[in-house]
Image (cartoon, helix red, strand yellow):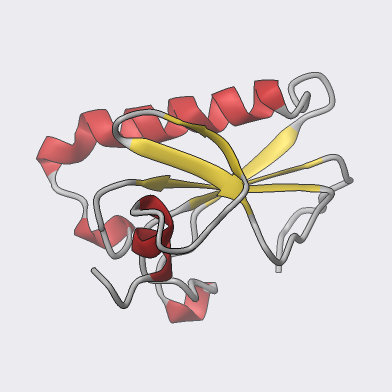
Length: 114
C-alpha cells in the first residue's frame, strides 16, 4: 500500500532505524517516542488493525509478540520491565492504520493508562 507509511518503511521507500526483522515482522524506533525506549513492531504484510486479523494469522500474531520479546532483550528491558501496547481504532489512539505493537521501556508506567 503506497499510501501507508509503515508499508513504505517495509519496502524501503522511507528510512527507519531498524531494531530487528525477519521475513514476517519488522521492529523500528518510533519517531515520536513516548518513553526512553519506544519501538514499533509491525507485520510486513499490511493489516489495518487487530480487527483485521484472520484465524489463519494466529502464527503471525505469535511471531509479532516474540519480536516484542526480542526487542525487550535487545534494548535491555527485561529486568526492569516494559509495556507492550496495541491501539485499535481512532478512539483508542491508533493514528497509523497498519497494525503495530508499541514496546516501551526505561521509565515508570502508571495504571490505568491514558
